[in-house]
Image (cartoon, rainbow, N blue to C red):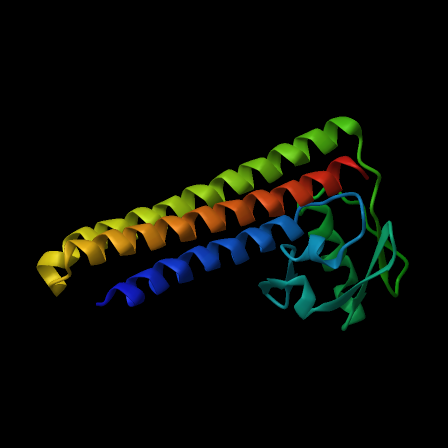
Length: 186
């Protein structure tokens, strides 16, 4: 394995961490309607649990309202039950055709709790990024024996990996700061 391949492998792992963090942050409720809020909801449908988006269309027609339009109207009660038991703190209203999910305004205390969740998600992402850095550095240290790298190549690989770590950590901070701002200023 050459130096560029090692650095690219570490970069790929760090990029996946950023994408995962972005997905996690979109699922955090901010008081504004977003169809991503219901991404983790699984509905019991014909004997198996499937994601909500496979049995219904989710839309956000208003800033504080989601609508869930099932493909099969017989699934209305199962969808309603899944949303109620999802742990999101949402109360769906079923009118026989469509389910309306009002998004309640967040209290100041709840906003602070959500900001803590955002910080924790950011810290978890940073830990994962540092883990990728450590793996890359460990591989570069064994490279002189395994792949006949010079000491300069090892140093350059470690420097490149550190630059990647710094840039990805900064990206995590930026994503989390933006989400915290969104949560706290609603």
